[in-house]
Length: 346
Ligand code: IPM
Ligand code: MG
Image 1 (tube, rainbow, N blue to C red):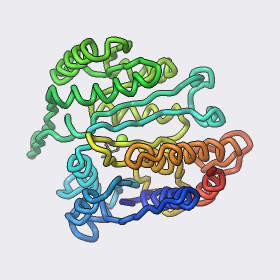
Image 2 (cartoon, rainbow, N blue to C red):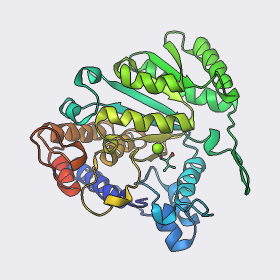
Image 3 (spheres, rainbow, N blue to C red):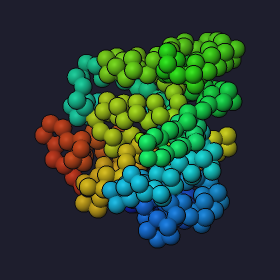
């Protein structure tokens, strides 16, 4: 689902890389392109047409570019592109949004943070994706509006387990982020997290941070974090912040997973309508999302690693889109960056 803005640009790049990987490894991937978001509203009036849902449900994995744009963002609009995205996350029940934040040493200069703070940064943010304030009942009249934030014990247990399992396979550290000094949902989150961790993951070191403090610690000591787990909206906000460690939002991929192998893969960046079609968008987040797709939904670990290595090699060789230009490197286009990455595929 290419979606809107630069979504089609970066989706095309990801598809090209997947096809190049298929060629080199004797696979064939079948793509079924479908409408979502503003593009779907324009064509059908519905941000997630039934045909798109059916196609996603029949697929082994779902790739998404980005949705949204000023054309559809009137605060009084009844139908919005983002509704399509939230609905497909919910329909596919992909409750665990995995957002790895990895730093390429060559891009340290692209981050607004000092190099010594970035040394050793390697974290995964696990964002709860199908609950909380994004999905609670909403009201609006002339004088007031409300958004309900609701979490069940089961929703918290399952996301904490996903995060703890990831931490077990890494540095064994889990940081849970909430706002338990104010929010009842956060107090439940903290209780459930403490209970699950003590009962099932006694060997994992658990740290708990309030979300405001976490926003600060992400900038002051980002290298201390291994796996972070948090609710839907906090995860949305903190991952945009964390992307600055990597130099650009355009670098970060994400995988949204549920209980089965079908996942939804999307770069964390938005639709950036101002630069759509100009050939200056950074395709790395989308291409890295395609790597996650191969690993988590298709079980193609070697192929996934070859994409990730190719991105790293292209960057090491000096390939830079405008958002990550550093030192003496010139910027190249979205398409040239993709060609460079394909050239580096093993
Ligand atoms: C993201 C995006 C979406 C979200 C928007 C487009 C609805 O910001 O994937 O982080 O808030 O989840
Ligand atoms: Mg976001």
